[in-house]
Length: 210
Image (tube, rainbow, N blue to C red; front, side):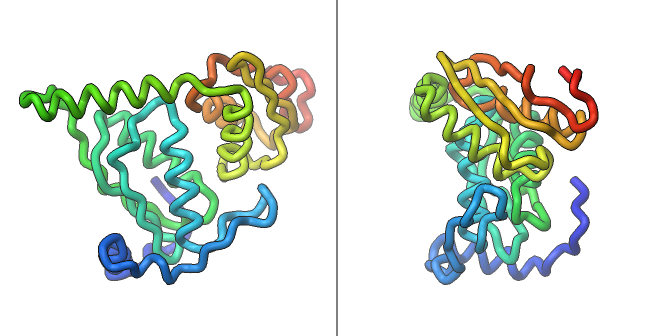
């Protein structure tokens, strides 16, 4: 992934790792954005935004992912179940507002569990993942609105979202076909979403975009 800003010293990321055990991260400012169009303020808010995006995805199991952010530099650590999930986590984290650099240190564990404990844990994770696919329309609408507002690539934090029986309708004007496609794909991959109706999600200068 190519981002335009320089990479901070690795010592910053190392200090953030220690924060998981020593409480260093608590010193970072934590304040919610005053509007959906603003980037999260402070490293903890950026980390929380990444975590919420990953956990709301129906395309991965994010329970074993740890997110560390220092001075806008994000690092992903932990485990995912496939190379595809690792790439998807990287794409979603790098697309989150407030991230200026991303270091993907996720490990892929794609082999079948062989011990009873490992099988039970795998079954528990699979069950939890399946249960998250059933969500109320209210939850879906609120979550999709947050996902779209956090995304750099969609380039529109004011898309109107409506959900009925898991079908999400999107309305608004996007700056490009790529931004429109990204918004649709992001919503499609949100837990609980059965399908996306993007007929009213248009591209500026092209009222017939579908």
